[in-house]
Image (cartoon, rainbow, N blue to C red; front, side, top):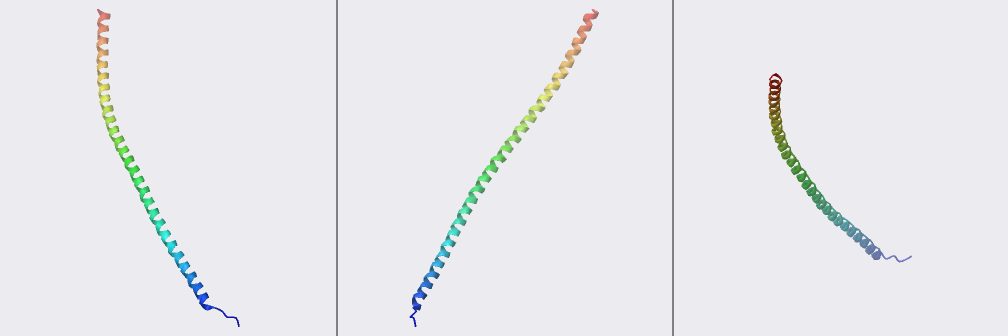
Length: 105
């Protein structure tokens, strides 16, 4: 009958289990490390997006201010055009009266 060494087999099995457990621990640590890196990357990306949105919001506010200023300028110019039209109308009446006097006189 052949002589079989169970102690050597037992050590081999224990070593295999130990290596498997170490592999699992390393895998878990790697997963946790990558998870933290992804979280940091997401935070950086969110901060960048928030910064860009703030810049866009400021741009919109600036456009609103410019638009209000342009509306005031347009209202002012509209008033001036109305005055010029009235003045022009009066000037044409006076010119017509002067031509009438010249024709009759």
